[in-house]
Length: 182
Image 1 (cartoon, rainbow, N blue to C red):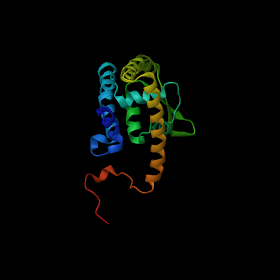
Image 2 (spheres, rainbow, N blue to C red):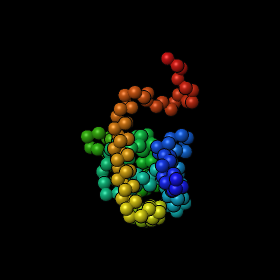
Image 3 (tube, one colour):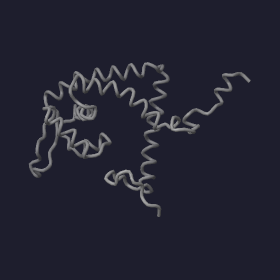
Image 4 (cartoon, rainbow, N blue to C red):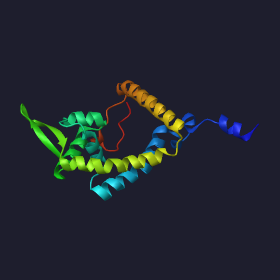
């Protein structure tokens, strides 16, 4: 048997799932950590914002007057972390809060001029990192990857709905002690 044919018959890591190194979510996490480290250094080292704060700035660009809860939902982040990022951005003068007239406790958030300028400087740099990363793929491979990624995202949403009924809610206040067996 030809060696290349033999190699092609072996299951891929996504099919094998033998170790943690084969798991899709772990592999995506490794990719995100490696590529994301460049964005973190760019954001924190050059612009004085965290990656989470940058994500908020990027989401607010072109979307003025967003409720913090809507922003958290759009970013698929919990509201507490989103609120902390908004507080930091407010202190840095990158966003503004406009209280709602009918409910002074609620507010809409928008980028300030400084926030929009940050986006306009930082976005091309982040795009360049992404373009360099994707340059490892041919045009057809990139298109196939985008298609596969979208199908995986849709499947994850389906599974999330199914597992939501089965799995207990996360409670990080409980610490690391596993629940008692039932």
